[in-house]
Image 1 (tube, rainbow, N blue to C red):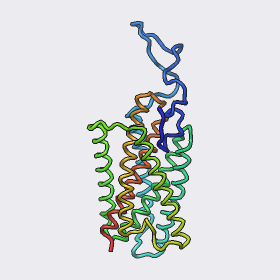
Image 2: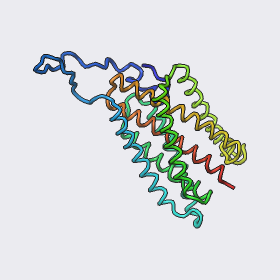
Image 3: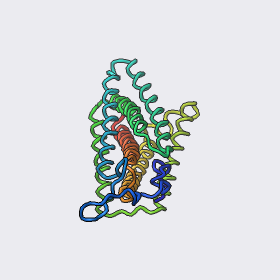
Image 4: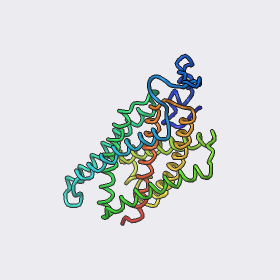
Length: 274
């Protein structure tokens, strides 16, 4: 079961390098009816329930971190130092969250502690960035609207995936993965150019018409990534992967949902900004 998703690509289990999924017959027990009972020593298997549980934990930690950061940021409109603090928290959270996302993506053995660590720092970024956008627009309800938009996009994509029985092909995986890497690369180059003053304003990530188009393209990519996430989770459950892989799946979903939320928030801000 090969995976080109950057989150799952390093997993030995997801790529068939983790050995046989079935337990050793010598470890089977026999019940009174004479049927073998497949019981294993150690961890259980990845299921939809374990994936939902780990995702809920990860998102819960992220939301708490975001809420604490939002409150700690203070009133950005009335206090210049509060605005500087919020920008610092956003940049620091984004940087550390990005580093942890790379570490989690390239680890062969998933680490729940690192996944939770990512959720904490990404939550700091989300909370600070949301506060900055809400202050700029002058309406905190924009955050609620972005959350609702993210939930609708997630629910709609999941419904389409299940009800229309969307089949993910290798070609689709490669196209989406290459497109995501290209987008991230372009964003990093744009960040470097704007930071060094080569490009004025925010470049392709500014809050203008070009920025609107880029964010719209990002939303489409994020939805495609959700489809890949659903596919890999479904494959992992069907293959009976170890329960720890639920953390990797939760991490992948969290990364995609945060990306989707940020882009929707940007779109709303551009449409409502002066």
